[in-house]
Length: 148
Image (tube, rainbow, N blue to C red; front, side, top):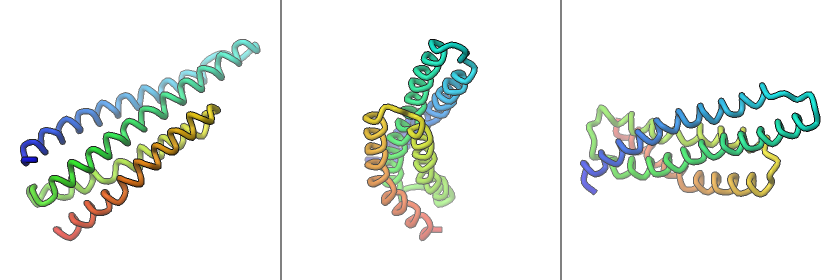
């Protein structure tokens, strides 16, 4: 790919990741809203539990999608190594750090989900992304560190 293609794709990913921050906030707000639901009757308690499970799943799916974007961002970042202004090298290095925060958000939400199949699926998918992304992030970090 050309530097311009890398730049264009990187800008698209920045936009998607920025939108992901807002989606993550909305998902967290959804979880928080459940705490305001009444829980006086058995029906209200059941509705609240169901709403919480739905909200926690959404709060898991959003950071998981951010993990996917982070992996793609790392791949684009790798293509840009050595093709950028040396003053921007640290910015590329920061791109390799975002994935871990998204993973922590996935894990914290999985902890409250009762749907074992959902938990197992997203834990496995997240671990698969980490298995591919963390070595790539380390490679990027080390190449940038060596260039500074």
